[in-house]
Length: 486
Image (cartoon, rainbow, N blue to C red; front, side, top):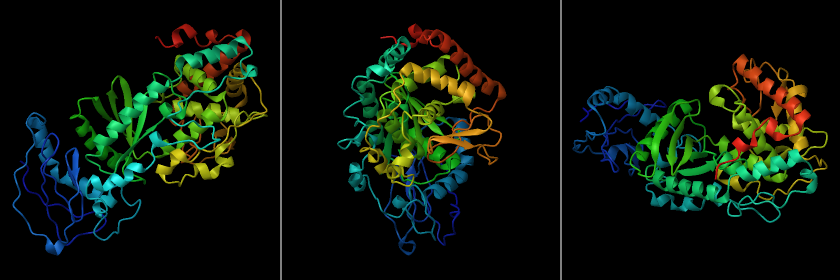
């Protein structure tokens, strides 16, 4: 049992009264948690939102003894947690309280609505169940982006796009590797189950499917990216995100269908786990990932050649070991933006600039729950460029091997052009500069070593020279080893 301890005041202002609430744990263990005036109460991996009691009406009550389950906390950990008890209390107070002199605001704190008494139970949040998420987005008549219920089926490719051996190889590999509808349905069912379970500790939480599983560029082996949104707004990823994901991880330990939950304390912290053989990465309030998922999903379906060419280029980059941000090379997202930039900047563009042509559909200030339906009425793009898939792949390699100036240019899909590389912090001393379309950060910042940068450039040059000579995909990407085994 923890000894009683003072609970220090919130960082935004001091309170005249400090008190403690102790509530029993409702899932797997019991924890004593001190709470500041007007706070919600977190209890291990579960959360209870008490009815707010005015200070002058509050009366101390006898506190029950609450201790950790011995099979979850070993001896050395008990001492460590006892020593850090006050420090943990401070983080809980700062995270869940709007402050005694601060009125709750829409984006003031991710749980300020709860603390202000806007929500007092899971049932109170039932009105939010109709909020559209990635899984409920639908397409309006005339839009090029299919709803998730319609799947990703597209009509036959025009003959001009597949008029040679190389183009046919690209199309065949795409059909063999593209994510199937049942793959997406499986991930969606997991998302829905996870959201229900997470709502036992965060009643108004929403879990969004994002990344390659949803943006149209996924394969059968793609991991699933998830974004947990409690309240839209900026968070401190070093503290808030780690704290929330730690609570979710403790919850996941109690769920039999979740395997190996592991918290990765990166710049954007993620909780990694497995469900039914599928790898999941859960982040907290990284809402830019939801926005760019639906931007990329629109690009994926706005022109028929986009998905095959991007999938094959991702396979090519993986084969040559230049698509792994954790190892200092390109991320999958960066590579997709590089392909889209090339397709946008051809003399006759293959795709439009969606953010310039439809700014209202991709407004960075749009409420996150409206993002999935934002681009649903955008029509397909009719390009005058009738290049085949093979010609586009060869042109992509040539562009980055011989045309693009790595030391002078910033890739911008947002403006469909290259921007001059300035000496601002985001671009200074960076080998590769690719602008994130919404928050305008550098998505290629992982490439920070000269040897890795030179290896990336070398692969573009060598593959371009070989493919130009051979016109056979096998010479830069062995198809036998690339197709998934059935």
